Image (cartoon, rainbow, N blue to C red; front, side, top):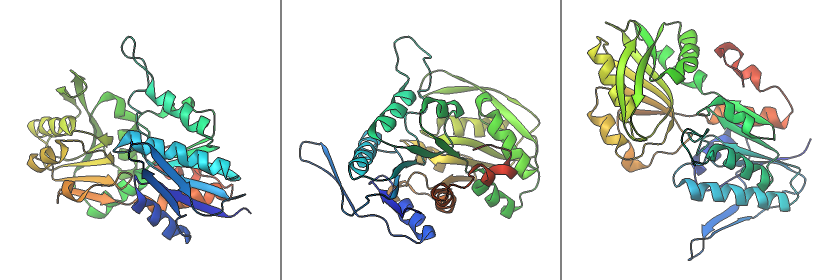
Length: 317
């Protein structure tokens, strides 16, 4: 069996180190820096010829730099004669631009998929895509993970009574149904209308949430406007405590301030995206997906099933 090698860019080095700790390997030595003119320079500082290489690099803030680092690391690994290159992208940037919803706009999620393939990746490992059909944008194998087991385990341990799962929009019904199945609780929907890229208006709540503790589930939180507005609508309809389980903490301004001032009791996120110290608050709880990613990398390396990891969660990888 070829030797496994894990390397990483700058976007989430801590996650890469945590993954390597579970795999009992060291993070490969790399240089990822910028020239004075702003161009990015990368170099893999160790021999990876003939190895099974996994490049850990979520395309989070700053997304364009993170993405360019990923492309260059893939290209460097390909030119260094790696046997197989897997792009490990826990957070897949530009995923919200997955269709032509207006005239003369790009399908950015497809373009990024093309660029990852063109750079030389043999397969991609990602997690909780904004839209499942993005898997079809790739012409290389895609392993699509779900953090549902990580997030639901937290709520099972809390043993919250009268719990109900809520989708913040109609598009998240499938995710809400999966969470409700694992938590053995009913689910409801917040019907909202998006007025612009930055503003939404809650229309009504579909389902009985009166006198129940609510957990809102979603794939990402950006500015937090939709989440806070949904929480307010749920409280206005009789909900008690309102929690949120969000996979990717993008947390663009003014998300953290909105969460601090909101009625949300707790916001549970994963470490797919690192949260800077100045954006941390007691209301935000971070759970690690490093064990999940490490086990998946191990299974890919050993040519074993990945989908069996999610058989009990009612989702397919």
